[in-house]
Length: 121
Image (cartoon, rainbow, N blue to C red; front, side, top):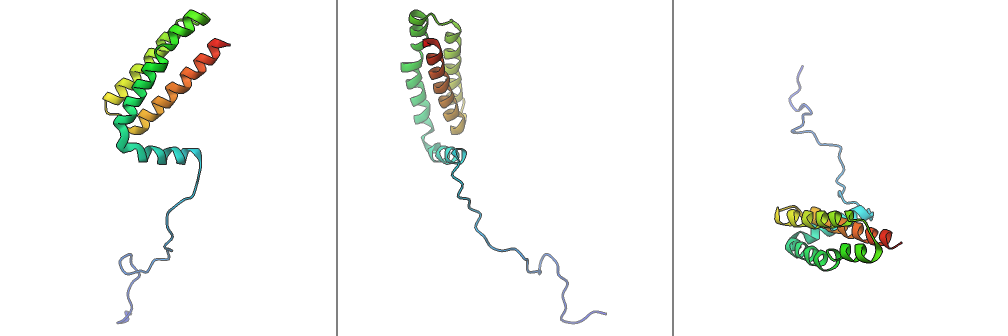
């Protein structure tokens, strides 16, 4: 038997048991800070592309000559340096995102610093 004032609890008229809590997290991990930084720098993509090219052209492209001539480093360093340099050029001119550009720039800096330290020891 149906009653006049009773309604079925459907998804349209049923009051949910959900609480309204903001979906914010206050996590301060290094990955979250990196993600926030890259999102803020999305407007400066051209700046980061040009900065990485200039920085690599001034500091990292002469590095193989220095390491090979003075420290008898293997010639594989030339291959690594040119691969990283052209990877940055292709990523920047190919329209890669800001996260890709910054990760490539950071990776090339880290790899070159490690190569220099290893070859000088």
